[in-house]
Length: 285
Image (cartoon, helix red, strand yellow):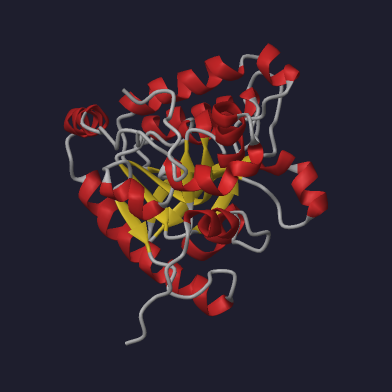
């Protein structure tokens, strides 16, 4: 069998951001039946960058929530490149509370460069909206599964990513901020982005190794192709069916306790003391 070519962290970042990579609507169409979109935060606003609603998965009612980037430039602008504002996270919170009320599992699809950092978002309570979602998801009494399909950056990802199971596609990335932001803050040089990608441990394999994510969904062929997407969906569909069946059997209090223990026991890797050129990182001790 031909060995799989090694891919650098920077190459995976580029793949995760590829314009033709499947979007949340593709996953909804491929995995679920009878999806009904629900809109609005019930406080007067709608954020199109976050898509949510109810659907059927193998006959099981579920709530589906995901970042929406769009498939072309016009849609990118319309959906703010997947950068969600407070009203979007409040919409997600409303849908999760509704899911708990009707005992529906929650499935989230994460693909965002981060929460929208604009002045209006900050004035409208961006940090509070994210924190509230994290707190609620920690105690939600229904199963939650999150899948990082492309970029998973910062609080924008965490706001719909506190889950019983978090999976990543093989070429997805998951990080506290973008590699460009990391390089700019730490080294005052955004051109060191390739080095930042290696230092940050943002790839699926690295994060699984350190217990940040629970499993990695294979991308045997590029999922920008029809065959590659179909193969990946078949694996994801089987894993979702098996995991949801198991999680739904758990007592609700046990489910929440296990979720709490999961996050309490995540340690991750300490930052390396030196970068590739021997420079000592500021936080290393």
